[in-house]
Amino acid sequence: MELRTGVHLSETMAMRLSAAATRTGVTKSELIEAALDRFLEPDNASAHFAIVTGFTKLNDQIERLSADLKTVNEVVTHHARFHLAIAPPLTKSEQNIASQVGAERFEQFAAQVGRRVERGTSLLQETMNQRAVANKDRFARDLAVSAARSTNYKSSEPVRRPSDTVDSATRSTPRYGERFIVADATHSRPPTPSHSSVTRPAVAGATGGLALIVRVFLPFAVGYYLSYLFRTINALIAAPLTLELGLDAGDLGFLTSAYFLTFAAAQIPIGILLDRYGPRQIQSVLLVVAAVGAALFAVSDNLLVLFVGRALLGLGVAASLTAGLKALVLSFPKDRLPFLNGLMVMVGGLGALTATSPTQLLLTWMGWRTLFALLAVVTASCSALIYLLVPESASTTPSMRGTAMAGLRKIYTDSHFWRLAPLSATSVGTAWALHGLWAAQWLADVDGLDRAGVVQHLFVMAAALSLGALLLGVLADRLRRYGIGPEALLAIVGLLFIATELAIILRCPMSSYVLWGAVAVVGAATVLSYAILADYFPKELAGRANAALNVFHIGGAFVLQSATGIVLEQWRPVAGHYPAIAYQTAFALNLGLQIVAWIWFSFSWSREPR
Image (tube, rainbow, N blue to C red; front, top):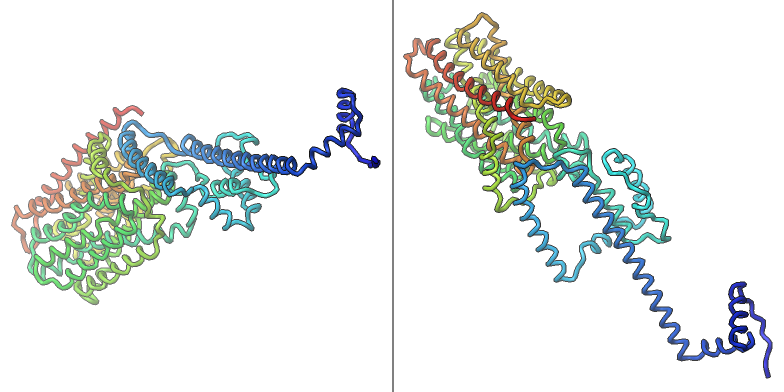
């Protein structure tokens, strides 16, 4: 007995059923009955279910593979965009060291990948899972923020088609690949194109604006302030030391230059350590050494102990400028470095300003021994400030193990470096030697000024140093916008310094405040020198390049300060004062070296194709 059952079919299925019945010569009922019988058979039902399940899993795998491919494409696109549109091209002189560093980094990368493969763990999967857990409730908002941010950077990104972006609407539930892309867009988007932006997005993102100034710039600026204070304070304490310990001009020159001797000797090792471990750790440790040197200087009772204390001071503050510059290179865009360098040197100049009337008041009140004990406490506090306040990201640099000597060879065999070093060393070194000691002696012995007049001139020189550093930084920043590099400005400063020294030697009827103020400004020309080095060498060599040039600055100051004292001793002092001809002879020798260096720099620079 057959039962009648009504079945509702779609129009398409009804047409297919009619065609099958016509083709096979059987009725529609027979076809439907045969199909149901086959479908409802237990074995066939299991097989059909297995097939459907397999296809479902395969479809899920294909969807996941598609998401993974989109993630990989997005990562590769970001990476390519960064190197093509953001990272500056390397010059031929930079390619050798870049190849060496790149080969070492690739070996480390390959080793890390190998360890991951052996352990069977996926860093990509691990990162995605972490991001998914962290942003489970914020995915939609993050995606919207990412899209808005990407719009803000259209000017620095290649044109992209809508099809190049992962569309979150294609699936109702966001997958881990999409979360990864959001994380990449949010945390790795490049900043404004600059040479220094390659390794600093994390720093800029973690601390921005005022916080970056407070946590990075100011701690290192305070350290450089102390460095300048220790460098120039001997001009004021020379008289008390002479009276108490019976020192002559040669002893003063030897004692004061001890600071420059250890300062210069430490520059190359410090440069390597800065590139290896970062400025935070190196500067905080060295300032402890400076604190010990200040304490030893305070309790010394003879020339030898004074020399050791002064030498420890030089060693302890040897990284004050280069560590600060390294931190700036890691934390700020390249086109702002001349201004920030100038600001750093300006703060340091305030240390020289402190070593005038304020220090004279403290000397009158507490004496030089108590003053140095107080400075030891302040220096130790600055060390703790840098260690605790500076973010670790501002000191993170690539490991340079095995490439330190290659980097130094690169620097010391570069023709650009040897074009710059003689002029920078003779100009800055002479300015530091004069400001640190011999300007005060000239003013007392040759110009016949009393103690108050000497202190007033030193105050003006310190103020000129601070303002000159800021002025040179601003000028270099502005002139660069018009295609004029810091080399041209350094040549002008060198020429003006030669004219100023000539006017001092010939005792031209000009204001001594103007002449000695101009001398002090040249001491801030390091602002230009370090900006020039930033153009010559990649940031991986910033610490060593600055230190390599600082060897010449400090070494030049040491030699010139000591040599001036030796020349002065060739004349017999009258009533404790050396004659004018002695100073004029010593200063003229320095001037001759500067003229030769200026000619070398200017002519080689003018012949270089640009």
